[in-house]
Length: 128
Image 1 (cartoon, rainbow, N blue to C red):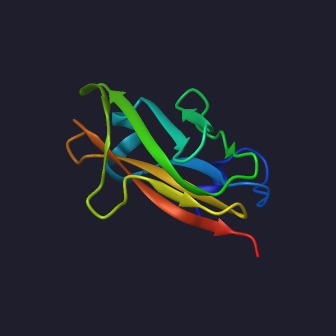
Image 2: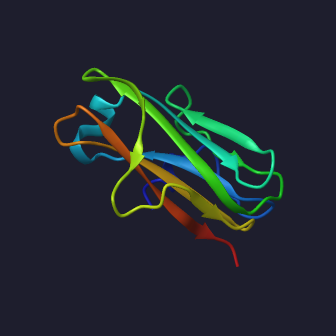
Image 3: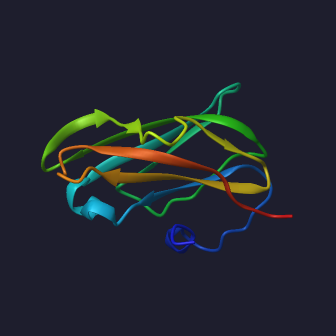
């Protein structure tokens, strides 16, 4: 999986839901989305953390948690001001992850580079 290769260190599953961000090469996303933040918040609890363009390979690890998490993605670039992104049409706006899995939030620029969207991959990689 391309996103796994971009995370820091080895992906060791278990002990809580984990998350990473992936910047799609489609539509030259890294050229058109230059500042971004992916914030995850536990729906029924008080855990939250973020991954930003300042540390794009950061892997989030929850303290033994699993469940559904809110996803808030903001981004900006040379052709658009900072804004909250919406999910692509086929993706859920939130993300689910079991305590033995890692899940991914992807960001992709629009074809004209004037906007961007995100998508979620629930339980992208899991440990038996």
